[in-house]
Image (cartoon, protein in one colour):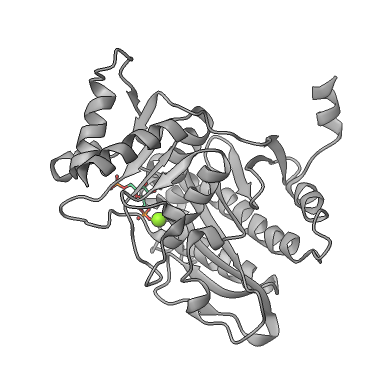
Length: 336
Ligand code: AHM
Ligand code: MG
């Protein structure tokens, strides 16, 4: 009868977050309002991504469609939608997007205490072949109201008050943590609501999958090479691990969270800081991994201890099941 109760007693993301916030007497609903605007952005992008294949038939990005309108590239469009939704929420003050070189300081009349860092459409090179892509976001809160600056987001990831992603795949799934575990919500298109479908996600302590771009193997650092070799040719009698790599961070991390295993975008000889951006890729995913019982490591330190110097700084990252990350940490430690 549990399933039946769920069918009529819908735990929407708004209801869930309101419940969570009610545990904090000082809460005035600002976070819920902010989140509702993020959710709006996710729904818009979801609908655009679903139409993307079709849109191509009637007019390519950068060209004009049959109505003679300019078609915007999906990542540009997604950025605009999130920027406008976040500003109009009246709850933000500093916005950092992967799509924009500079941070946006919200105009005084619309200011609130939250700073949001986001990648509006990560993995957009996968759009044309229909592979899952996603939006990634992290949220900081200002302690006291003052003149906001970019220093307010150049903070360690452990200072975030919430993080999440939305995956546009065979279904649209929003995974969120406000620092008390991780929960997943799936968009019910007929209702236009995200419904709690993955309560209290915990990543398996150990996994059977590794996920890395092996095309970079030639340039890998020693510990990465040693770890991947162990995955393929284990010497302790265990079975070799499976390799899964989509090349779309949200999809690779979503699988890792649900099935367990490890995701690596390490340093290599050409890219000493790896590829992924600290503020809106590495931090939110590391926050979620830790909240789900996993770990996130840069090769030198806990990822959430990093302090970015600039908005778009990158860092090597290894994250996933607790024991799997422990294993590669030992290899980095042995290297000295
Ligand atoms: P993007 O921000 O240009 O889309 O790049 C980020 C993506 C991630 O989604 C993914 O994990 C990574 O790049 C894959 O990189 P690579 O193609 O080098 O394996
Ligand atoms: Mg990106």
